[in-house]
Image (cartoon, rainbow, N blue to C red; front, top):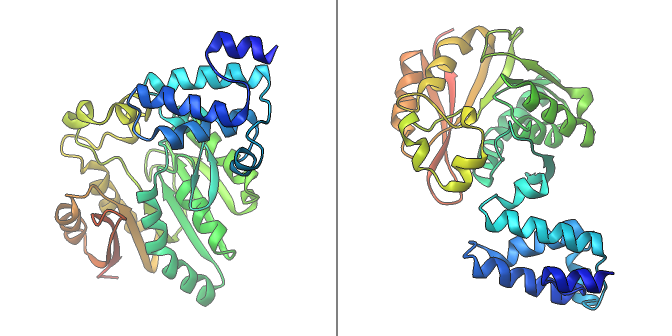
Length: 298
């Protein structure tokens, strides 16, 4: 059966040959990283590992897996991001499920986690607890990464999308973090209550007019609500700077991800709201990516 289906699909039925064929199909379609994407698709849908491919390349792949791999390759060739096809992505060592209403977490955002982590640890040690508010939580990536790294933390993930909140809560349960994580449907601070040691956000920061110029994989598959930062891309920062003080503990921190050209503009917005800079951090590409602020007036 597998051999017959393999012939119909143009895919070989052994693991090693299947990986080569999948890579060739993606390369022929000019997919950016055909070897990696082929491996991710084949391993996920065949239930195999990289070690198996090396140790047992003649391992047979069943008919159902071949059909699923063929369908996934077609979707990838059509432009759908590989992690959307798989339904999950790794972030800070955590496997996070995705949904249509969540931004796909990317390595640049791990910079935010690393940037604020020392403050979270210090606060938890000093206060016995660190309370985190994650605005626009999406998959829950930022909050869950911090919860996984520091046991004495609790977090609230805020989002305007109920589907995103359901995805974040599912991720928390799957990671064993649900007892320290709660979600809240709110338009920014509208329904938020209490005070937090850390207010974190990877807000939409693309100018509305620039959405159509984004890479196809971003423009066509990431939710526009999580991308569009208003006319100049800075609207969310103005909201956070204007309203956060009422929810921030004394000596607390606000940490935000920014577009790589927005450092001065975002700094000016927070400065006008009586915040001073407590850190600037660059991503793996050397671009300004994360800013930390603290109140300069009580």
